Length: 219
Image (cartoon, rainbow, N blue to C red):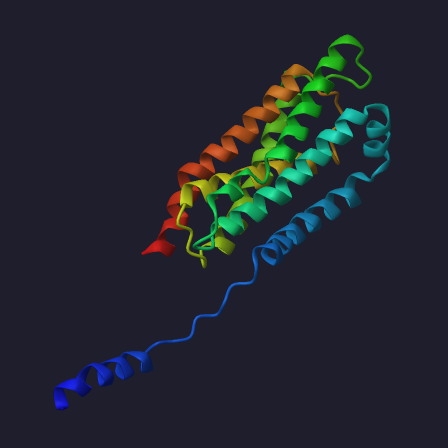
């Protein structure tokens, strides 16, 4: 009789020592919180540079506006995918969510590059100025990536590297969209190459480091 009550008493003893776990907000709400930080940065840049130059450039080169829209959609979808992948049991297919925005972003940028080879409207960036774009994207991607990693460390990502790739893509896309506020050059081959290099560096760095930083939640 005493032996039959031992498991029950053990269960009660262990249960009394457990602390309740606060449920994480849904992925869309955490995505909105991260986008709020991006919006604060955008507001600061708009207050400094204004909107006149950016809107005039978009009117002259609509493909640039489409590329910027694609970057924004990519950032939103990649961040949402990262938060969704951080929830155990969610489908790995969430990693495909940023694909439509990414195709729009890359496609519009490529078309703009081809058009400016034939009939350039805006000044073309020099190699040094294109390098400044690379520095801008990487510089803004670092804090945005760290914020996403901090928000995701409370979750339990069963695919930390894939989640980290989404973090890098979201941060790089958001930084590229922010660059449109102060970018004054046509999408020439050199400039496009620097943008692609910056995005590649950010995604690769997040895949290498972000995956490790997300792994402690598994232990």
